[in-house]
Length: 457
Image 1: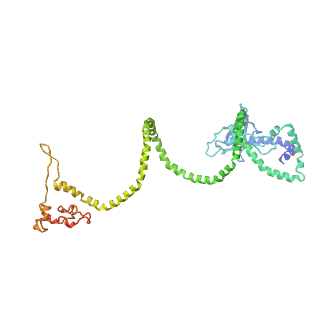
Image 2: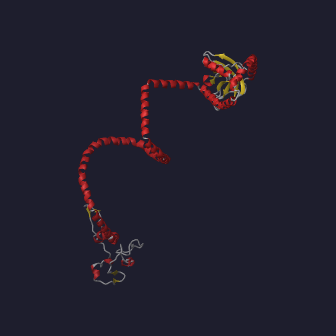
Image 3: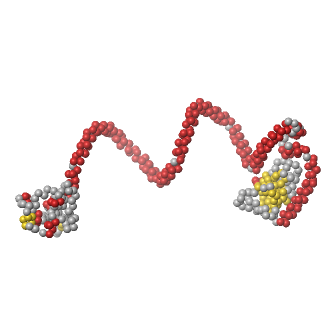
């Protein structure tokens, strides 16, 4: 529809072109004077093609006019340098700002403007007079340039399509064609956005094309290897097809396996945290372990004769262990009997433990006295002291012929029938009671110990 309108009003637009151009020049001059007087902000945008920009064309940000083009010149490298003069208060713009040539419609020549896309917030400001190189600018493609890329036959067919477009919009096909155009609009908008992105990043697109050409050339040079790879891939796919039942079972079991693997992976972090200290200790232990391995390499040859002898003794050891198996039953019976004997001898052992000290002291102290190490001018000598309490002098054999009555009341008396003397009971009790200890009343009778009256006799 837009093409038909363009074709129908082309003559009327040509009539207004001079007037529109003159008006644009006047407006541009007035705007330049206002901006110069207001002390605005200036940028230079470099384009590969001016794209029908003229002096006085608008400069916009987010659809709002913020300035005009005050000068167009050709640089030494063949690029167009457009001076963008922004009104006071509109700058400075942040670094990373892009500039693109836009058109308000396909009709007319003085309908082009420059759209500025400011850079990210937080970027440093562009100074007054900064230059936006080709990396930060984007031109525009005119419809005439598109038509010039078509060959004569295609242009003739396009003219025929435009000439017979009235037939398309008339009759029963008009509604269908309009419906198609409405549905085509989102697709064309998406295509426009894609081509715009490609045009904005032309350097990356050129690099992609160049790398693709390099890759295609490399593949062409290795066509034989590529054919072999395709053949091997076909063989691998055929082998997979032959094992489709096994692959089906694997796919059936995969969910359960993945579930278990997920549970295992949940504990990986805990495991790594616990293993990390051990891994830290591995590094300090590496050097000593290296020394051990070096010494082990020298030690292993010396161990071979010992291992041979040990291998020769293994049959005898096996025979001995086999014989020990036969002793298992008798040994079990012996251990059972030993357990009974130890249980029965527990009171005897307990008595020996309690009276052991009295027995040793009775032999070493009561019989021969304490042997001490003395020294005189001759040298070392030993001395035997026979120690006996006067009140117990008549104990032993003479006491058996005496009665239990006191020979001298309060001074000298004898005792008989002493068969359950407690440990330490043959000594007079200390005033603080420290040697009157009764460990087990089932083994001794405290009443048979020497009474405390001997201390006051």
